[in-house]
Length: 223
Ligand SMILES: [Mg+2]
Image 1 (tube, rainbow, N blue to C red):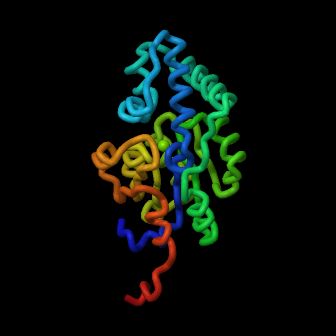
Image 2: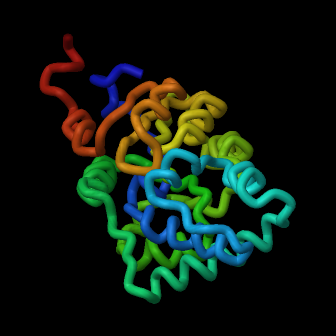
């Protein structure tokens, strides 16, 4: 991926948590709710960031071995709802709205590929008023690598014309698996060292770093 060519990409696939929304507090509450059901102590924010990974089935098998995933997911949804009801919010990340609006104004196609529970995602995207930006959304995806090819085929997305943005190594691995460009963001769950190890095409602090690159540089086409 050449940074200066970023404005050429037509198809933009976004992860949700940590990429467009700051929902770490709610996800941490929900995870601690799950742990509490099995008599486990709370995990702190930084420990969670260091240990949590996708696909989350592997993470839970490590911390709560032998518990059926469906049971854990029920507890997670319950914990997420409790967190929401107690007033914890998950706002849009800084620059996310401006970035989506800019892509929309340039007739780019936008998609969501997320592991977040599908019902929670739908509710949240509508509440935040950004659901209309996305041509299609794939939420509740256990392993994004299993979904990416189907998604590319179904919507006739050329790999050379598509970029996937996410905040976790699994997002970068999914982009590579699908043969599309990868942009890793430091606005979410994993740090520069973790994400750097996944070798994304681009590693950025936040969306404001690439927003100006969406504009067609003057005279760039003739150079
Ligand atoms: Mg994420």
